[in-house]
Length: 284
Image 1 (tube, helix red, strand yellow):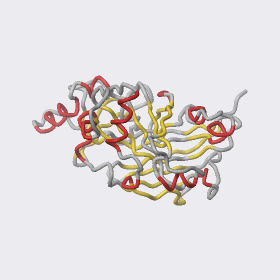
Image 2: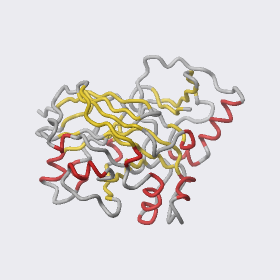
Image 3: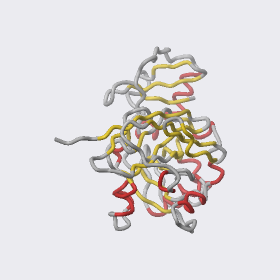
Image 4: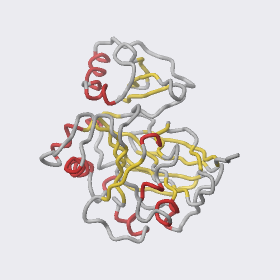
């Protein structure tokens, strides 16, 4: 089952797709957001599908929006794959590295990624994204985190490395918060429908392979991430957690940074794929 938000930016409508068939969710909700998830929205969608209550929908040609509307937070884990930490010149961290992206960086999975004026070190990062479904505070164990995760989707944690490292004074979020820097989607897949630690994730730039790894290689697995985050902040329904990226980014020096007109393809097994084109912002 895949939860989707389709339509023009700012005017998306909620749908569910199962067995290749799309169904309209308007009779259940006007939006897929934190309130919907907190009110057992996924379970209600399953029940309605089981009873045959949802009308089918023709969604061909509709723009795909981010699968969760207006996340109140986008929390990110840095250097969560040992090989990526090494290519960044760092030792694997002993504890999760935490930084934030502004929620307004979130766009649809196939929307244009804007290169800021003067930015020369824009990078791609395929990541598994966790979507929180229940409030999480001071969870007792990693296993307890299982009950607060609504599902998973794909994130491209686009980064401007000069902003992040050269002029940031260690404040990573400076390189992470430019507009359009978090394509998300295409779909929200319920947590109980896949194993988050056994997914192949890949990225391509202009059709050429860049990253190819598995979430099995995470230093801090999904449940541990959510458990640890809950000790330091309260996670709310609809919050998004980017869980880190594997090796194969431009920061490694192996590949050039993104240029105007480049195309990225980001994919994770069981979650689909994204495709973005870059476009330089010109002021004046």
